[in-house]
Length: 104
Image 1 (cartoon, helix red, strand yellow):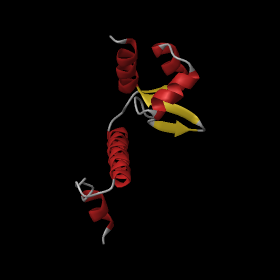
Image 2 (cartoon, one colour):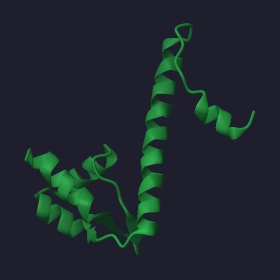
Image 3 (cartoon, helix red, strand yellow):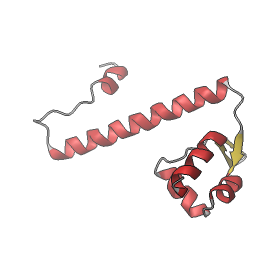
């Protein structure tokens, strides 16, 4: 079976076991994250996007390093680019995170 058919046919049916449903739900979440990441990469290649480093993000939003890692892991903000082990985020994402985190 071709690789594309695996990704297209991820749907839940009532006859599947509970564990299979959980695995499929997790795969669907990963698929959505990958699609968002690929869209971000395309935007970065097409546009001249303002990037901010992690120190700016922490000071602008008012969070610690551990909180930034947690928010990144939970999908609230994603790394736009890594250069020499330094993380850069899009300015648009930083502002969105600040508004969401501070409840503005």
